[in-house]
Amino acid sequence: MSRRLGTTAAAAAVVVWLIVSGLDLDPRPQLTDIPVYEDVARAVTGGAVPYRDLPFEYPPLALGLVTFARLLPLPYASAFSLLMLVALCATALGVVAAARALGLAPWRQAAAGAVVALLPLLLGTFVAARFDLVLAALLAWTAWAAVTGRWRTAWALLALAVALKLVPLVLAPLLVMWHRRSRGSAPAVGSLAAALAGVAATLLPFLVLSPGGVWRMFEYHIDRPLQIESSGSAYLLGLHALTGNPLRVSTSFGSQNLVGTGPDVIAAISAALVVLGIAAVCLTVALLARNARPVDVAGLMVAGLATTIALTVTAGKVLSPQFMMWLLPLTLVLPGRFGVRALAATVCVLVATHLYFPGRYWDLVALETGPIALLVLRDALLVTLVAFAWPRAAARTTREERAPVAAATAPGG
Image 1: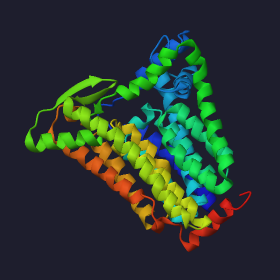
Image 2: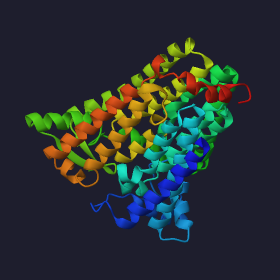
Image 3: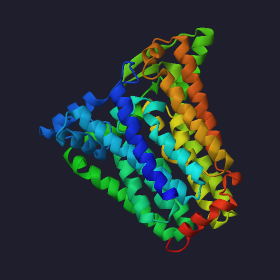
Image 4: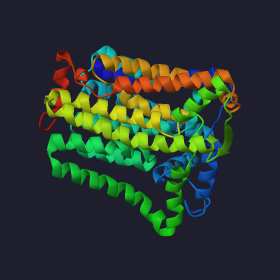
């Protein structure tokens, strides 16, 4: 029965997607990146050299994805939406597979799959206008591969995720720890090196043609100011709503941002918090794993991966709504009672995001109190999600859940 849950979740995702798209259940004005993607794809198929002739803020796999949509025999928006529907189905299958590999009860597997299937309703139809669902699918199957001991697959999928968006690189330290515990130091370090080499290979042709253009991709993210939906911005916006302290909003780097000395300081603090938070997660996992039994390690490590992603999203200086899709593969499958709470918190985060985006986004930019309150609520829920996902001894799998994990982590599993 449990093996059919993934197929059921994927089928439900298709039904929900078609209903939401066909009935236009979200009549609010949409904010879409489709025109940007189509312009890039048109330029590339017209002979432009990426990063040299046209700036692009994402790594080469993202470039290939948005260009591939143009090659399909459909209008660009329809082709891109179709690719994202496929990615949503792959995410549903991967999430249920990871939950099953972790030995979660069938109802937990079904709940995780249901959240993914309902994503267009919970988060909004804009999920079809961003390519972050592909990242969600890659992360879901990376978790499954690691839990089941398929380390070559896990590292290959992580490399693809990094080549799509740079952010999944934050998962590498924990994945090395996990692989090292499972197979030893040499295979772990070798796999990390191979994954990094794979990512570098995707950049190499463009680096040869335009070193400065490739560097501008990295510089773009380094130089970005405090985006208006980030947790640091929510703090300043909350103060503005309560005390009337002046804030200045500026449009740059493809987003609306808070600018000035205060926002710049908070942006720097945000970057430091991400680094310190990842280090704290790794230390916590290392200490707990020292005395953990092999059957408990998988749940502990997945909790570490989930917390790392949630921390990166919550504490970063940029927090776009599509980042919520990064949470799905990992925060939905955590073992134990805190895993149930993390799943519930994830749903609340998705709904809270949908309450202000996209319908009230421009009211937020205009610094109106209502959408500011919704943003503060959403970011507070993200902090709560980090707390629920945090690795803890109590997050180990229960006795009834251990058998599948034990089989998966056995030699040759």
